[in-house]
Length: 297
Image 1 (cartoon, rainbow, N blue to C red):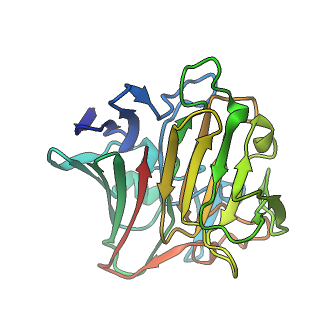
Image 2: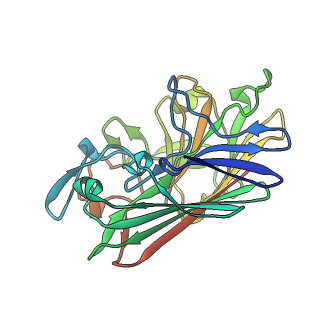
């Protein structure tokens, strides 16, 4: 079921299936910022990644000496959520573990996804409650796709767009290369000019650009998608997330994704133990993990 929120500035729509954001419109010019999904390219708009981010080696992991299988990005994006709270500015959805989830993920949990609008800003929040009898291990992340270019103007071209990293101090970022079977630990430099990374379909010929959000000299927690021909932009703020993914289909797909993650796909040398995964979150019994990110347009 589709639910909507609207104020004087923006309107959003969220599908209870996957608790997935499906629309983000700036009302002053009726401009849709969110990719609407197209099976010719990619049929999703903004899936929630849980309880893993990315792909497992051989689509399997082990926990307590038992092997489990799970497909890329986990199962939450393909589950029906329950709307548990709604008011004029916010929506809150719930997914609980069940017999089906126990077959591939041996933890009892409650996952809450919340959406709140204020002015031209959307806040998306995650709350994960561990209902198991022991520690719970998980990752969670966002995968919103934005129209690229943003407008239907024939003069608005993909090659005019760039990512801007306002707080970046260095002129390079170190990318974690995504290979067919996992992530390589051999980092590659990505050159940044004046805090900007120009993008085109060639940017994604080697799949997603994946970065750690914190290093000795840099801290990535804000990014903008902008262009050189008009004043339209998208800004995402994601304090506390361990990794950032930037992705589009290399075929020239008309969308680009900005993905803050708590976790990452398996490295190619990973031992496949869930508790040893890069970026995995360990949550004690009855504790709650909370995190939020913001989209401003």
